[in-house]
Image: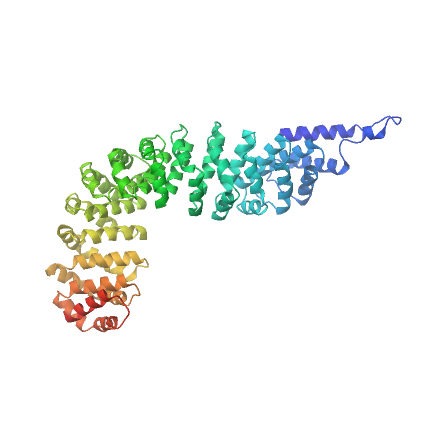
Length: 551
């Protein structure tokens, strides 16, 4: 503000010296400011002197005053307009009108570097501190074209301001696509290699935001962004490391780009990401975990990451990190546990002990989701008995019986239980544990859950639990018979063949129980199964339906 006041006060003082000898050429002593320019300066000075401590208001008079100074032939007045906008922009909560954008763009395109600095700071502040509608107005005005050109400015301050503005604008998919369409990627990549840390950070942040849109990722790969992200992982700045690890994580969502990421530098990215698991910064560790998680969607990477020594660092994070980072580490472990070659080492390293503890910690829902997924993967291999022996199934049951758990947790827990149910030891634990509460909750979810995956997984677990055909299962069936009949009816009427199939399979298991057989014969279920034989469902489902009716 002091700079702006100095400019304006100097011009006001000079304009007050209006005495001129009459015998001199009048043209040489014209007032330094035109009348409307003097009025504009006074209007803005009055605002700054009287209302600076208040929330600024961009009235029509002030907009007009700013326009007059912007379109003045006096470059110093143009600079004053830019400085005033820079001062206003940091505290202005009022949405900027489109009428203000034209003079602001003019100032951005000024030949004067100081004017460009102030104007670029103003537009960056308007996106960062103002209402979200500012971003819409700025994009609609076409200012993005000017901002992208300013990325090539020789001034690092202007580069930094333009990058910061583009980063903030790149928070909607529409804007992200437009920034790429307007050719922003090459300049951002160049600035991300800048020696100026602020410029580097802002450019890396802008590129990170662009990676969130699937259609942008191919353009980023073509422009060489992958190598940039990998190179910048080696910087000493935690913000840059965070941005680049997160960008790699986003790029690795796509199968085709995962191969590109790992190919660059001959697996260097895996080595660097594993090293970042030891970072003192939790946010860097968190994004490194997510990047490894996504890269571990491919089988070769699952083996390579473990062989490169990631497991001890993931375990350290699980034992002593913030909740979000801990959940990210378990997410990475989950994908690594898919590969059978990794199962034994995960068990030997004691990860089940950590998963046991985490499942008993309240409200860590993301961590519980990934812990259940890890257990499911290990159980699908050959580790079900160890999981039962070390009490991890009991921990899953503990979380499952908490009715406050969100749907995402219910889906993962029921999926793990359905897989575990094929193991005899686990099946006994499910039927014997919880004094019947486990089956009752499974039946309730199969009937009432609004999440199809939870319903399906619950039904699968029910079928596994009740297939033993002993006195205990007969008691459980009898106790829950009404709910069981209800969910079977719903599943048989489903348009999803998978639901129809699992209902028929479950009925096959339950018909071994005399009590259920009698209830089945007197119900509407046989009629519904006969309808299936007349439907267009796949032949294997019809074959199973005939088998059920014949039993």
